[in-house]
Structure formats: structure tokens, C-alpha cells
Length: 82
Image (cartoon, rainbow, N blue to C red; front, side, top):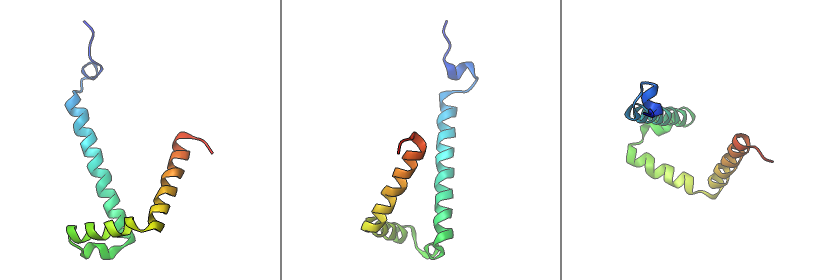
């Protein structure tokens, strides 16, 4: 009988899914901390106020351009190319 690779390692699919959720939560917390470090006044905003603020920031053409540049640089480094 062929064994599932997750079973042969002793870990279930649920275990991997839980680990992925834990890693995602950790990443979100770190990014939030980074934002608060760079813009401490954001700590004063409620979640709704911060969401509205972030929506306005990311709608700015210059910010959109900077984000596209950052993603392009990431892709270049991650996947190669010039």
C-alpha cells in the first residue's frame, strides 16, 4: 500500500495547514509592527480609521508606482531576469 507523504513523516495535512496559518499570522503581525515603527502616529487610529487611511495612501499614484517597483524588484530577485 502506498503511503501519503504527510503520513509517512508523521504529520497530518491539518498540522501543515495550522502551521501555514500560524506563519501568515506572524507575518501580518510583523508587517503591522513595521508600519507602526515607521509611522508611530498610526497607533492612535482605530482599525476603521487606519483602514481608511491606508486605502487613501495606497490609492496615491506615487505610492502605486513605488509598490509596482518594489514588486518588480522582488520578482527580479526571486525569479531572475533583467
